[in-house]
Length: 192
Image (cartoon, rainbow, N blue to C red; front, side, top):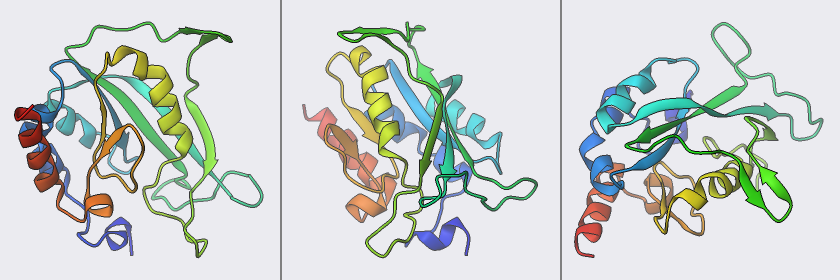
């Protein structure tokens, strides 16, 4: 079935995702951070997307090792050369200077770890929800980048669910094409 079979609209080729650049640039602040999940089967495609969207790669932000929900051991996933079980999320920036990753909190300094070891989230029928990322990813982003946003919001494209404090766009949430969602968001931002 592949990834395309998990979505009513199928999946988008890299060139089509890159072509969203004008809409992405219209809804992002002039200086912004981007977390982009990278397919290990297409390890260089994200460079085309970053260039079209006007971002430069900084580092790998997170690596999610999927685990077996019952045993807690690493999930033995599909893959062309290895048992593909890892999803990598890169951090990129647009017009942003490097920032100090250590945050002082009441509990002391905090910096996120790259490794996330979590199972896939499942639906009420215990079926894995394709592309749903662990809640811990959102929590880490909010804690890590949130202090630098200075009142700006967070946007998730191709979202699989709503999240408080985020603008979540894409077919799974809005039932619409991502281009239409981005165009509407850009229009709302212009009206402010």
